[in-house]
Image 1 (cartoon, rainbow, N blue to C red):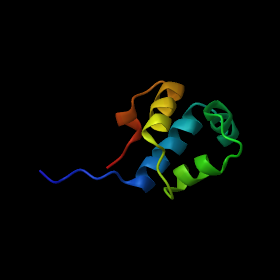
Image 2 (cartoon, rainbow, N blue to C red):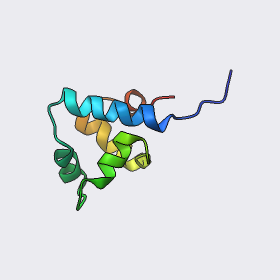
Image 3 (cartoon, rainbow, N blue to C red):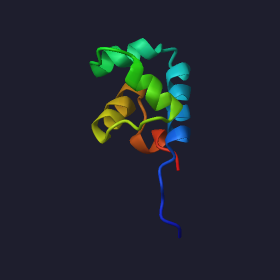
Length: 73
């Protein structure tokens, strides 16, 4: 078995997919997360950065799914 590694680009694409499936704007997520701007969410969607564990947990609750469903290898 290979050591599992998170793919930030695929994870970001999954965040975008979940956002679109739930008919949400980036600003909706930013507001929910308490961010002052939308940049963090855009960076996640592009795979430039990964959400922290706390943010992944919050996203999973917001989308009604699990953290494992958001994270991609």
